[in-house]
Image: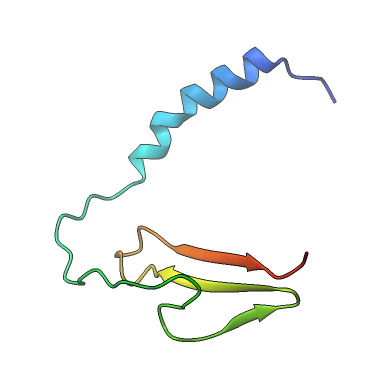
Length: 78
């Protein structure tokens, strides 16, 4: 496999960036109000624990029309 130079890789990435914007849809109306979710709490009031870490969903894709998903990840390991 041939090694790619950094300059070649970066110029390709910059050239592809405008193409990523073409797939985005613009939605101007939202019917869902913003909801305050405190630190450590989940948007749905559920617990998502895997091993020594927990995850809390803050913004769901249903809340943002499929545009955004935000989580809070907390590790309990020292």
